Length: 100
Image 1 (cartoon, rainbow, N blue to C red):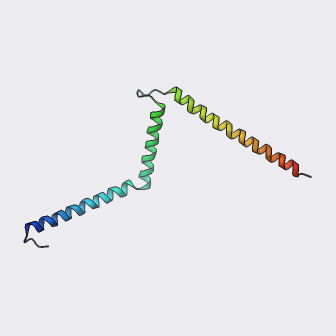
Image 2: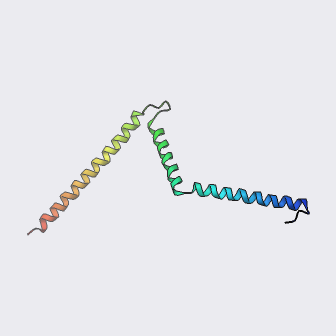
Image 3: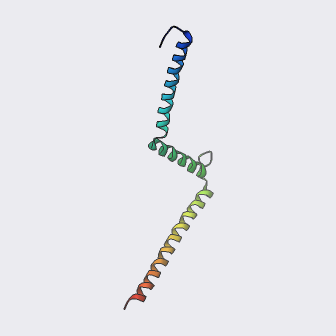
């Protein structure tokens, strides 16, 4: 590192500045890519999406959408129960065939 040439000093300063910026960028990327932070961002995005889907801009519930979601959940639960009952009855029939 010689200070004989002003352009050389300027280049050295540019290199130091660039190195510092690069280190800062790498630190910022490592914080952004941390699994804890990624999960937090995804949770916040899901909350915001749910709120936008179920509430009006004034904050009131959109009952039509809430009713549709509730009906879908109830439908899935009913299907699961019916499926479980059918499996159980099938298992009972097979068991009855095997019994002596």
